[in-house]
Image (cartoon, rainbow, N blue to C red):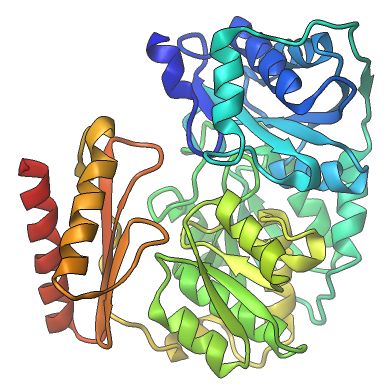
Length: 451
């Protein structure tokens, strides 16, 4: 198996083009997924703007068709458009050719079954992987290949029917040369928003900066927001399923505060459940309760949040990484829609976004800290840490690693799903309590890693 085995990750298949991800690998991924999902299945396939996307998509589709699947190529689209297409056109599944926010030399495949549900760890990925390496592919008469060029327009019409921006705003967007360049500026304009767009030429080399919205990559956008007097800034990732927001002062809005602002909007319309991941601030749970909503905590990861959205009939979901999920667009995470919805919420507020941010209480917290730990050890180390804290009598939550909780704070220790690391985050009501929690967590991590 060698290096190819590592392309199979918790939520997708991802590798460096020309090294562990080649046309032959893409062909076999298509054959494996086609075998898994079944001959005669109807699938949609799209890709982002990466330079390797067209050749990998062609090989993947060849593999799918060889197993008897009927494939519709919807071209270059944001990842949320692919999810939309699966449900809206009543398809049996689909594949997005993308490496999301990874550097330009990377590419990969997000596999979905019916309803746009992801193939992920514990949700079919192991089966696809087993078929891929066994080479036991379905052999049958080939399926059909069709092309449909209107998916992006159908998606745009669908989401714009659900957006109602009520006053003139100015929004600055950094499209990062990604696939959102194809659609975001025109949607904001058609919604009556003055839009200032930077890095808005699709370019799979991502010349402006890495295709991931972070404090480092959005420095140019921060300046543009201030210079233009924009009400809102939005930085998108390479494939359009994640965004970070900037307030009118050019400051990054913490993802927890973004979620509470949207929760306020949705819960005012009649309550319901809101999903948030286990890394979220206690503030999120408190705010949802205060607004009369039902707070539901989830494991980190799209597969788990989307599952909780459907199971709970939730109106809204969010992850600290910047994924936002909306019931009215089939429950999917969608940065294009999230940007428009944030503008709608702002257009109905008397406050500026910076005033809302400054008026929201915040608890002292750490960023997510990483500790190198080999893949073959990381889950065992977290299990041992969990057992120790349980035996010591701490109040713990174990849906994703171990979260140790008391009335004044918490810390979470979990194994990374994608890297040879253990990750830790802590939050408390005071700086002194935060230091004590971090010391306790780090002492235990180091003790078990020395093991």
